[in-house]
Amino acid sequence: MLSNKKIRNISSNIAFSIILAVILFCTIFPFLWMLIASFKNMVDLLNIEKLLVFSPTVQNYIDVFSKYAFLKPMWNSLYVGVVSTGLALIFGLPTAYSIAREKQNMFASVILIVRIIPAISFLVPWYIIFMKLNITGTYTALILSHLLVALPLIIWIMIPYFESLPKDLEHAAWVDGCSRVGTFCRIMLPLSAPGILTCSLLAFIFSWNNFIFGLVLCTNDTKTLPMAVFNFISYTDVNWAGLMAAAVVITAPILIISLFLQKYIIKGLTAGAVKG
Amino acid sequence: MLLKWVDKNLKYVFTLPTIIFVLAMVVFPLLYTIRLSFYETSMSQNAPMVWVGLKNYTNMFTDSRFIMAVYRTLIFSGVALFFEVVIGVTIALFLNRNFLGKNIVKTAFLLPMVATPVAIGLVWTLIYEPTIGIMNVVLGNFGIPPQLWLGSPDTALMSLALVDIWQWTPMVMLITLAGISAIPEEPYESAMIDGATRWQTLSKITIPLLAPTIIVAIILRLIDVLKTFDIIYSTTQGGPGFASETLNILAYRQAFENFQFGQSSATLVVFFVFVLAVALAFIKIKSKVEVDF
Image (cartoon, rainbow over all chains, first blue to last red):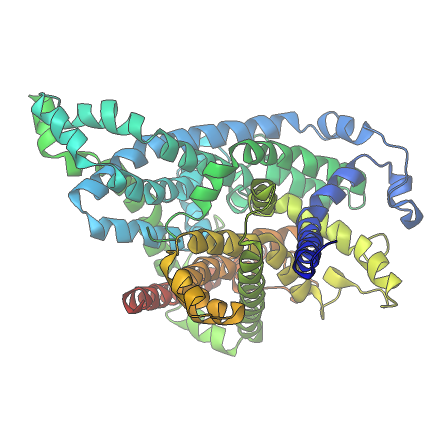
C-alpha cells in the first residue's frame, strides 16, 4: 500500500513533468517547425491539412545552395566572424588585463557605455565615413563594424575573469625574472583559457547573427548570411519551404555549437549578472 | 630595453589599440552624428549640406510619426520586459530543484537567445501567416477567429512583442537560476526550524535575496529591448504602414529609405541619449540595491 505522502509526492512529480514538458515544447517549437517546414514541398506547406503528414524532400536545401547561392554568403559570414573575433581578442585581452590589474575603472565605464549605445547610432555616420574612405561594401568595413560588438563584449567578460586569478602567480614569475608581458602571455593567458573560450564563442555568435551592419555596409559580393536570407524574403515572397531551409542553414551551426558548449555560453550570457 | 619600457608603461601599451579604436569608431562617429543633426542633407554629390540649426529637433516634437515611434518603443519594451521578468522568474523558481536532464533543459532555453534573429523572424512570420500559419490553426480549434497578426496595424506590434518574449524570457530565467544557486543555505535551515510554510520561505527569503539579481536581469533586458531592431526590421520593416515603427526603425527609415540624413541623425541623438539615460539610471539603482541587501 502506498502511503498518502507517497501518492502526493508522485502526483506532484507528474505535475512537474507535465508543466516542464509544456514549457520546453513552447521553447523549441519554432525550431521544430522550421525544420519540418524545410523538408516540405510547397504544395504540402500550403495545405494546412498536411501539417505533420507529408512526403519529405531535400529539394529546398539543394535550391538554397544552387539556385540561391548560399555558399558565398556562408563563407563571408565565417570569414568576417573569425577575423573580427580574432582581432577583438588581440585588442581586448591585453586591455581587459590592464583594466583588471591597474584598476583603470574610468576606462571600464567607457567600455560599458560603448556596450549600451544602440548599434544603429553608428549606422549613419559609418555609412558616410566609409563612403568617403571608399571602403563601403568591403570586408574591412564589415570587420570594423563587427569589432564594435565583439571588443566591448570580450573586455567586459574578461575583466572579472582576470581579477579572479590570484596575483601570487604573477609575483612569483616576476621574482623569477619574467617580464610583465611574458607573464601575461605565458601564465595569465593559458590560465584564462575557459574565459577566453566563453567570450570568443559569444563574439563569433553575435557576429554570425549580425544583421543591422550588413544591411547598410555589404554589397552583393560581401553579403553575410543574415543579409542573404533577408534578400531571399524580398525576392521570392512566397517560397516558404526554401526560406525555412535557409533559416535552418543559418541557425544550425550556432545551435550545434551551443549544444556542445552550452556551459560556456550560459556563463558568458549571464556574465556580470550575478555578482560573485 | 624595449621590454623594460613596455613593462613600465604596460597600462598604456595594453590599452592603446582599444583606445584608438574607441576614438575612431565610436567617439568620432558620434560627434559626426551630432554635427549632422544640425544640417539638412541627402548625402548625394550635387546637393550640398544646408545648415538648419535646431530645425531637425523642433520638427520632431510636431511630427506625429516621431511621437508615435516613442510611444511604440515604450509600449513594446514595457510589455516585453514585464512578461519576460514575470515568466522568467516564475519558471526559474519552478525549476529550482534537482531533476533528471536539468542541463538539457537549460540548453533548450539557450537556443532562442543564440539563434540568428533574422531566421527567428522568418519562422515566426510563417507561424503567424494568416492562411497557412499554425497559430490560426491552433486558435481555430478553440473557436477563435483567424487573426492577421503581423499583417494588421492593430496586432503587429504586440505580435512582435510576443516573439521578443519567447526569445528573451530564457535570459531572465537563466540569470535568476544562477542567482538562486548563489543564495546561502542558512536562512532556509532556520526557516525550517521555525516552521515556516513554503509560501513564507519563498516570499520572505528567496524573493528578497533574489531582488538584486532580478534587478540586474531587468537592466540587461531593458537596455537590449529598447534597441530591438533585427526582429522588427526582418519581419515587418516597421509596417504595416508605421504600425511597428519604433525609434530604432524610424531612424533607419529616415536615413536609408528617405535619405534624410540630418533628420535621422537628430532622431539618433535623441534615441541615444534616451537609452543611455535609462541605462545609467538603472545602474545607479542597482548599486543602491546592492548596498541595501
